[in-house]
Length: 229
Image 1 (cartoon, rainbow, N blue to C red):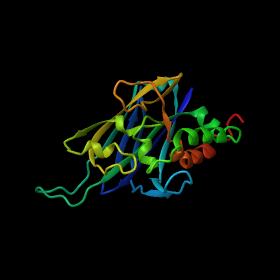
Image 2 (cartoon, rainbow, N blue to C red):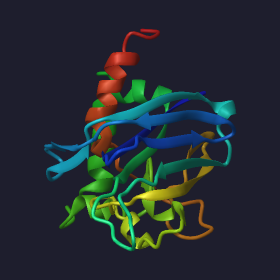
Image 3 (cartoon, rainbow, N blue to C red):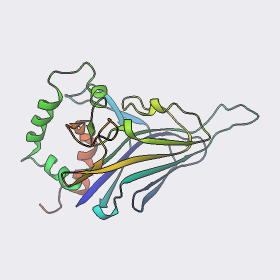
Image 4 (cartoon, rainbow, N blue to C red):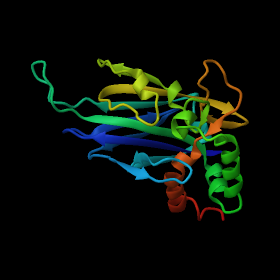
């Protein structure tokens, strides 16, 4: 089975490029970002208006290359610190990191099956309609990713880890740090651990797929829709 890994970040550059290394059983890629990445507003009928990164990185990965965790190493140590003062610094937001079976994207975006999944989302997701759907999703077990169980390790910085757990407003951070995301296998499918309860690997999983629908559909149309049709 092949998987699609996607990483969404926003970035405010100072002088040096942002360096991100993605690895699992082996190194997947090393990204150098040498210009700002802003966010854009997405208007989805089933969600309030929300922001997504203007640029999202996608990778096709073989099952054998996926270990029991993904590691995202970030090097963003770039500022004008001098004599105890700092007025300028590079900053970024880690907005999303998804691991999705490639065949699911084909299944989802094919005309034959898309409406079936949408009805499943509506049934499980929006009845009753929560006051803030996006926040409510990430208060629960959530697929394809759940920021609240990512492990953050900062080097020589004291950031509030709680700010990095909320999907709607991830904190701006700088410096050098690592993120570890646990991978589990459920029904024969590898996925980022969606369960927020410690040591729990079973039970209902809500789907936040519509939040990523437009960016994933763009990837699908550019890279997949003509494959094996």
